[in-house]
Image (cartoon, rainbow, N blue to C red; front, side, top):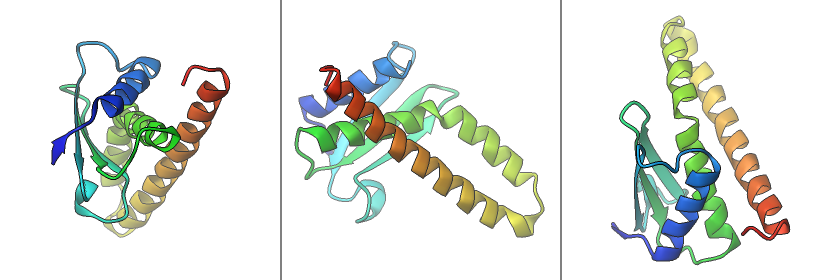
Length: 133
């Protein structure tokens, strides 16, 4: 992993400010790598500890500054903003009968990913249209 370029860190900072995670109480680390999360099919990966307000973001190192990199940055920060909701959902899923947990977790994770993707794309498109990106 390598340190993230300045333009990527700025995209993350802009997203944090917009989503209410911009204060000093949150600590974000941003790195780039060939395979975020150790897989070939991700542009980014985030690990969040919302209790201690730490987030580690890993972004694919082939991304260049532009619309796509802004979407990826916003996408990962939206995941951080949702972490408290995820924690509660996972606690509820763990309380379910074992035979249903895997299916419910899969459906929940897919729904979250669709929501985050749709929201990051729409948010970036609207900010661009308004001249803020």
